[in-house]
Image (cartoon, rainbow, N blue to C red; front, side):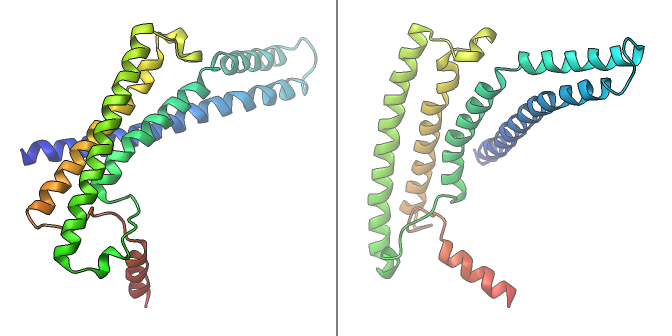
Length: 210
């Protein structure tokens, strides 16, 4: 079981890297195509009319401009990838304690009280994640039944539900992550949600610099 969890943890990290790289590459190619064709058109003016080199420059410029016009879907794809990054990152943030914790008052209480508050907080998070999982699944199922196209990505056979299915998947993963936290609190391995503590991080950074 531990090996399976480690594989999944590595997959989460690799998938987030993939989404970031894909977004960067798509945006980079589109921006380059949109800016390079004008460069070749300008360079073509340096040569005498009807020369072979000028024709070649214009041909390259036309090719780049056609490529830029053909990539009108890039903006929609980048938005979809960004949405997947955000929602997939929610569960990853719970796992690594990346979400900011607002627990200054909680830490003033004794450890047993902190543990009780942790149980209550986890229960609320589990309820919210479960509710959002069911609600978003029903929403995606409606989109799937009606097979609504995804704007510029519809030409590739991509429908709205293909993009939005990350929402129920994300909240299902969040549900699992909070169940893991619940078990750790039950085993007395931690007291709270284990979220980020900016003040503690700042103090550690300050101590390291001194």
